[in-house]
Length: 294
Image (cartoon, rainbow, N blue to C red; front, side, top):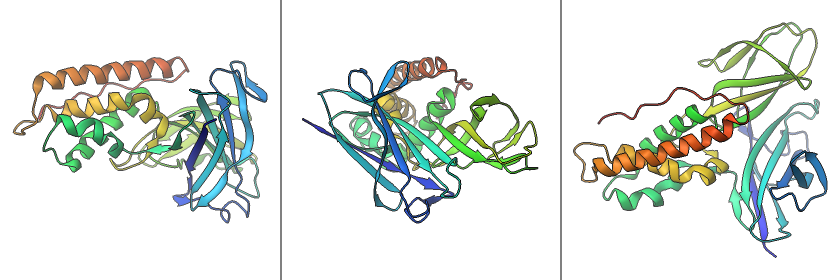
């Protein structure tokens, strides 16, 4: 049988999580659903069976946690949720991270634009990797803005009399707030300030409560890590979008207007596919990014 190894990198308040910051215990729990729903121990949702249910992940280094399991069959796809408890004193304070991993692989839950280099370099000979990184970062940002594919659930513990709270994702910056749940019930946000990465609630809390804030994210810099599942699902589209920009650059030996249009079409198809998937899950798409003319 094959072995699947999942690695999750976790930060809180811009610092890597380690046993000390979570009160002397790792407190990082993993739940995995097997997509065919043929193997599992407990049904958590109507269309999936939990293959691994709230198991503690193993601490490897600052901010790095892993978990491995034996695959019950070949060619399985798993969907996972990592629940990171951020406060020893408050067990309701946690962040959820979601992703997808192929059975039999050893994978990190984060990816970078640099992973796209092998899909790009053969088609733009002589192009410096720093230029590829810059263009790839622009395309990744556009992809995230358009599709809201990069999502994270942030948990905020309210304070009586305080209605403004900062949003602190593990990586990237918050594009928009998709939903807010107060004790499982949908509530509303009066204002979201993208520049300050803060939300103002539509009411003033009168007691300590735990809010689940679902946000859409985008990278701050081209070198920022982004979720592995975006790379797995849409890596070809991201590479094609980057090639479209590179092949449209005037005064370069790799300029190729015809192939730029071909790659732009492939990228647009990937965006449409991702938008369709996430819109079916109730997420809202943003206005289209226009490819620049160099």
